[in-house]
Length: 498
Image (cartoon, rainbow, N blue to C red; front, top):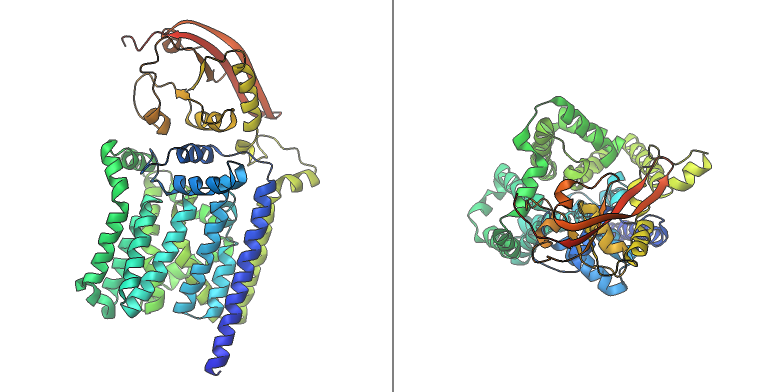
């Protein structure tokens, strides 16, 4: 093949990757504009964060809030605009991965990587919600490309881009720090790249990453390092109950995250082909960004519960590794890739059109059969709370739950009105414990939403009088819904003595 033919072939694969990514993204944007679901609790919480841009928040660094601030400033506070950044960033991630795979292997591999990235089950779901994974994976992919160019060419611009990507990734999600560990592992394991350890360029890139991340570090220092402590708390490593059950659950969940064929092939390579792959530079680069984080998450799963998406960053390079290996297998490999596309399209269709498919099958949606129940009924709850509030316009809303607080701030008009979280012991357990307080609100009346049942004594004794003024029952399904009692708490008496 001549050089001109090779360039034309690369352009065709690049055009195909662009076309496929544009098709995925356009379809998902149409779905986002027409989805019948409300915001999930985390999404509503991120929206509330976006109303007060800061350098950090209780459970996450700030990029997720900044992203929502930007998209909602552009087109408003609808569900579509709140989530808009997710499909766009994932589209960008797929195209950057094309460039990484093309540089390591060829444009054909890049096309398959871009096409399958957009169809991975975890990405099919992630594109329809706004979460920290979208910016994390984008900056991780940019960091991979910049690092490849930096190691190969040594130019300052690539080292600085790698440092910028690492810093912004840390401002998106803290596990971006593993990128540095993986990069160092690859350099140390590759003799021809070890000279970079004594070069100033990667260290300047590291300093740049630190400067970009510094505002969040300072914010944490000013707030008692609440984000770091929260990250430690959710891993529950201090409550370790060593068992293989968690590891088995984690491994099984990854078939759903990465896809059944892709994850099976990855396991095969890691278990039976690891030494041979590690001995080759290109697979070693990819494995260096798989093995450290996979080992850490697997170890945590032995001691505690892990979320299925915690391993998501490893699948950027794992996808390139699996695609390249399958394409080298010839016809069998191409058949497995084609089967993967078919399976993933079916999974995506099931996710995106679940309600339609269930109704067509004659299955009743219930609390057991509806995986989307937690994103239904919040707008109706907001309207019901507004109706109660109309009779008590001087009373502030109060809750005991983080997600309920966030949903009321979004779904009760006017949006972002004051919602106080009941927190008598003063322990900061979430963002709303950090930013709301009863201090200085003596004499104030509240509408207190709580789960059905009698009012707890520790609440009643802090007010001059209390009365249940409404029972809100939003029946999402016959066996599941949002059920709250609303109490009018009059004349807050202060903290008193415990």
